[in-house]
Image 1 (cartoon, one colour):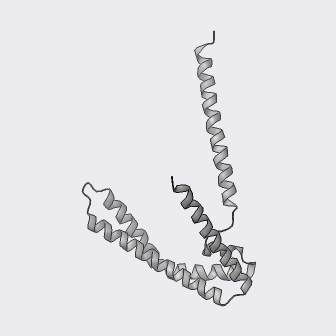
Image 2 (spheres, one colour):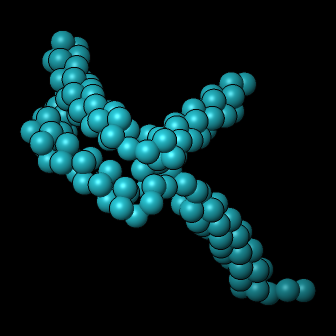
Image 3 (cartoon, helix red, strand yellow):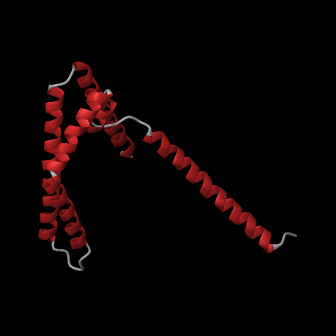
Length: 152
């Protein structure tokens, strides 16, 4: 007959091993996905050669610096929306206004980023435009796969 503390030790060991196996598997998936190339037009710039990549990133960094007020306003609007959601009585109009302000700020920044990417693409080589196009296609393919997975 086994002692009760041995049974507890075996159960704890099995539970720990299951936890570690899950952590190992999720870590492996995370590392595999972290190594994949960019999946958007913006991240596709990371696939350009060193000189063009530096110019591309500099252009996007400038847009972000110029758009700092809009970025901060969008963040503040999201904080306000979260605060409104936590209130005992929901003020639907205020929540809608805060979310609209956040969305408008996001769209302003995105529009500026995309316009700068258009300007970069207009002044770069066909090879670089192909790299950017491949980034868009990877992004579109990834979104299509995600949509298929979500449908029951």
